[in-house]
Each structure stands twice: as C-alpha cells, then as structure tokens.
Image (cartoon, rainbow, N blue to C red; front, side):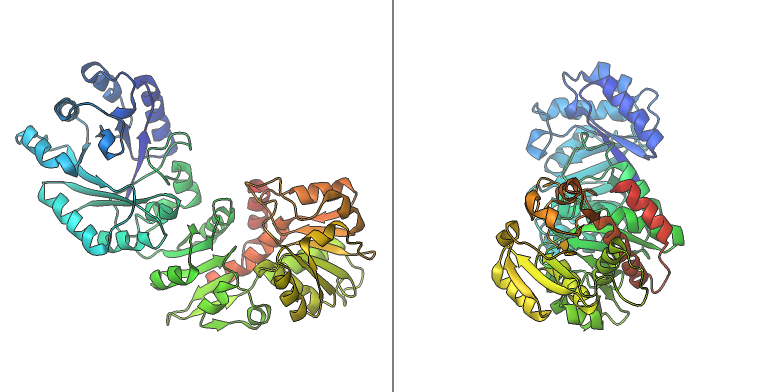
Length: 506
C-alpha cells in the first residue's frame, strides 16, 4: 500500500507538533519533519521535543539550500543531526544523492535496523529521459539506499509518463514524483504504479514542493486508498484546468456505483501528444474542454453523428482495440438547460423553435449550442472577437455573424436568448463579461456556459435588469451525466448525487 506522507513545514517546534496531530486526525500514515523550516533550530533540544509522543511514524529531512531546501550550514552539522534522529528512533531519514556516500561513511555502519534510509534526487527544471532516470535510480541503489526517491519537474504533462515507466520496473521501493501542476498525476496515481509513498499537505499554505495536493483531496476527492494497478484513469484535458469541479463530481459518482476508476484534472498543452503518450487501455476516457474541443475531432478514430455534425468533441472513450471514439454531450446539456429555462406549454415543440439566439463564441461549446439551437428550430446569430470564426460558424448553421463589439449596440427582437459560450467571467477572471450590462436588458433569457463561479458577472448584471438567467451549472450537470455513461460503459449516472455535488461545490 502506498503510504500518505504529510510534510510538516512549521517555523516552530510547537507548530510542527500541532500539525503532526492534525495529520494523524486527517488520515495520514506518516509525517515528514522538515527540520530546515524551523527557525533557530537546536538539534539537541528540539529533536526530542518533536519526536516525543508524535502520533505517526516520522521521516526526518534536513534539506540544504543547494537541493531546494532552507538549510545553509555545513554537512557535518547536518549529518550529526540526522544521526541523532536515528538514535531517537525515527523511522526514515532522507539524504541527498550528492552527499549520500559521505553520509553512509559518516554512519560507519551504525544505522539502526528500524530506520530506513531514503536517498533522494531532485530536479527542479525538467524530467530526464527514461534512460537517464533509470541510470539515476541505479546510482541511488548503489550507495545503499533502502528506498529510492526521484523528484523531477514537469514542463509538459507527458513528462510524467517517463516516471511511471521507471517506477514499474524498479526492483526496490521507490518514491517517484513529478513536481508542478502538470505533474499532479504522478502524485495521485502513485499507488497504481507502485510508489512507496506520496505527499499530501494539510492545506495550501503548508506546501513543501510544487504541485502537492492536500491530504483531504487525496482521500476524499481521489479516493486514493482504492487506487491500484487495475484502476482505470479518466480525466479532464484542459488548459486551464485548476478551476474545474469535474474531478469532484465524477470521482464521487464513480465511488457511489463502485466503478474502479479515478478522474483527474489533466493540464495539457497538446492534445494529440497527450493521447499518443497515454495510449494504454487503462487510460480509458477523457473529458475535453478549452481549448481542445475542436482539436479532439482530428484525434479520434471514430465520432458519433452529433459530434461529427457539430465539429467539436467534449468526450473521448478508448475502446478495447485502442481506437478513440469522440462524443459531444455539451449539445444536449446546454440546449436542454436553455429549454427548461424558457419553459413551454407545448410538449411537442421546443421553446427554442422560431426564436432568435445570439451565441457568443466560436469554439467547441459555441458550436454545440449553435448546432443544437438550429436543430430545435431557432435562428442563430454568432458573435465572436475574431469575426472570421464567427462567419464560419454562422455559415455552418445558416445564421448571421457579428463582431463581439457589435453586441454593445445590437438590438435583438423580442424574446431573444443570449448564450455565452466563451470563458469570459470564469474563475479566476471573474470580472470578465462578454456583453456590457446596458445591452443585456434587451434579452428575454441569458445563459452562461461558465459555471465557476455559479453566478457570473454576466448573469448577475442580467438579473439586475430583471432578465431571466440560466446558470452553466445546469449544462455542467447534464453534459456530465452523458459523459459518465460513456466512461462506465452504460451505467446510469446518479443524477441526484450529481446535482447535490454541483450545488455544494459551485
């Protein structure tokens, strides 16, 4: 079982002790005491106080500044402190590869049997090739490590794949982690690839390395205790991706039906390279968001009829033969949300029929809304910052094109719907809006595909004019239901749970 280690980075002994208790209460398996973070650290006085009655097994690290830590003293003092920690009964000691041979000589064979020696190497700039990583692991083993630790940095999410390849072939216990947001997958999937431990912080203010998730996220969002070699990997491929609530929604729903999969936020830069790199059948399904929905069409071997007509994909499923099949669940998610917002007494006819809808944007979500609205009998106007893209989409649905700036003075006919399908107003840029407030009063309904925040500036200003609004949360839930069923091979999505989660987290 991969252990969950909580790094303690308090500035005082008392703060460290409080955090150790919190780590135990939160479900951690051990703590890493970062001695280099303690201000005015006095080894003989402070170490016994730190270790006395610590509720969890302890890993002691005294990281020098030349390896990314805060200690700026000499190695002899540091070695003596680590030896003292061993004498006091700690379970693990971390020493850097650059000085590991010197430290082993310093020990002179006096390392207690209980204490495991972790020999570590940190690369804060990149992730080397598989061959270079394998050679690094061999060097670490040669100096007498009980546990190998290699931490690198992801400049692209595909870098993580090289760490996974080395981990599964390592013959000794190994900690393999890739730092930065693009490396998050290495931390969450550590149990799948045989990692000895992974780090989970108490909160975002107590990080010891880039890209560390919280212990709560590992346990409650990613359900890391249930991740194993056979766990399927799903995720949202997007850029940016941090703001998405999809991992919370999908993981809780997957857990509720007992489906062995984990859903991750995947910060990618090139969709085709990502899909080519993570081509194992275990990487079985993906959501696609900005800016990859149109690119996904060219990456899939097959498409359902709706996705092909729209020219945008938000769902990819890898079949057992390795082929990628693309779907679009944005279409039904957005259109059904808008229809319900409009209301209708005629069950046989869509409330969109005969209406004018102004779609802001020309990307994947905009294509889905424009296509769906036309199919329901609406007339479509497309407004976009890049006019040429607006023209292309408008022509595809038999509509009219406008420049985004034109909407300030555009006077729509009575009953017109405004649908924002851009990222304007999305967290963290919550002050953004595609249409000036004064122009919103001319619309009957305003829909915003952005769901984080739930009430965007666009929706708030429309409501202030007394205009009916439809939140992107509705589209989010409805498209996720379709995705869930594709990912799980037809298991019915737990709609009530999805709505409960969406209400809680958006």
